[in-house]
Length: 152
Image 1 (tube, rainbow, N blue to C red):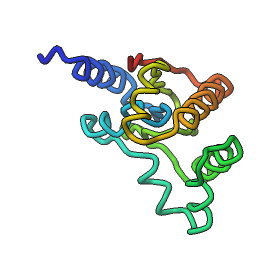
Image 2: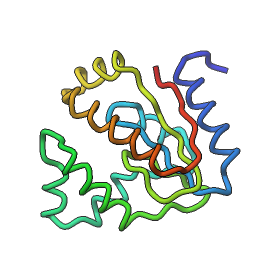
Image 3: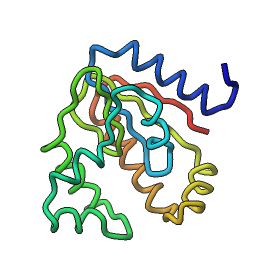
Image 4: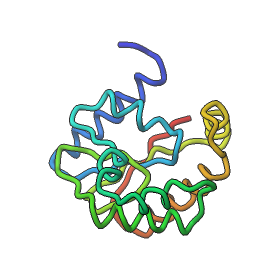
């Protein structure tokens, strides 16, 4: 087995998803946590953005894609995702919004790594950090069982 940190993360995530394969699982993390990378290695994984954006009007899409990110934009995106996306057992949904599910996997990233990744991708660290803070609040308020995976 490959000893790369990425391989260990994928293996850990696969174990968690197998353990919860009969449940509706939401895998969440702020921007730049590695969701897109992980989706490629998880059977039946779905990307929340790929599910939601085709369901949005042009006006809705323009609004939620504004920069800089604000809590109001975040609240609108949360509402739209929760109204329109439903998770099915065995098909984990990866995204930035906690939606109705039985179990949450939270991809937690350190400030140092988040700053590095947002810089490399030309994203605003403050936007990613604000999103992370909101996401952590949503997880706690949801009272849905969850596990954290340390992304570094």
